[in-house]
Amino acid sequence: MRSHRLALILASFLLTGACSTDQRTDVATGSSDARVGQLMRVAEGSSQAGDENAAADLFARANRIAPEEPAPLIGLGRSLRRLGDYESARAAYQAALDLAPDNADALYGLGLTLLRLNEPETAIQHLDMAAAMRPDDPAIFNALGVAQDLTGAHAEAQMAYRTGLKTSPDDAALNNNHALSLALAGRFDEAADLMNRLAGKPAASRRDRQTLALIHALAGDLDAAERVASGDLSGSELSQNIRFYRALQTLGPAERARAVLSGSIR
Image (cartoon, rainbow, N blue to C red; front, side, top):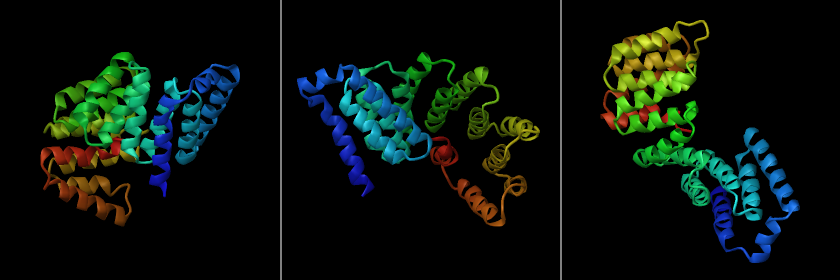
């Protein structure tokens, strides 16, 4: 049922390019601007509340009223991506870029979507452009680093993470992914030292400690991985993680990177 409804949403915004002259004239009125603004505010509220189905419907309605505006398409792409309809999200972001080729939000959203579609090389092209437009945005550099790690370009990935850390030194995603990138590149001691420093801080999170455990697993030290992981996990969670650590030993570099970084792609 959901896939049919999402297909209808997608069709609705793709058809807006064929709207009549009367419809385009109506968009220019103040009342239409107000309606679009109200729909966008309610859509954002629905998205923040976790109701992406409602948000997608509202963004699509806003797009039908203002088909020349990229913002409703970007919002629609984000909601569709979060709902797991990546092909439809790609189409929404691409439609936004057709209207505004230099829109950093659309480039970033399309980059994230392409990562979900396992197209990291193409994602890098869009994320590079977004990073050039927003050089102080840590989320863009984190996504760029993940994309580069997924292609095996670990040195470039580490540069992206470090660039993001210059403006956001305490960003958890950047710090954790930087350490994982070092481990994926075989620099296990550096990766463990970095995460030991982070995991030893009073404000350290469960994520920091589990990343340290994962680095031990990537280095092949399953005993150390289990010892670190056990501090935060229940018995069943620990057993599940140990199975994952063992499975990592059987994977090639590309599959291992994707398994390790899959949680970083949203």
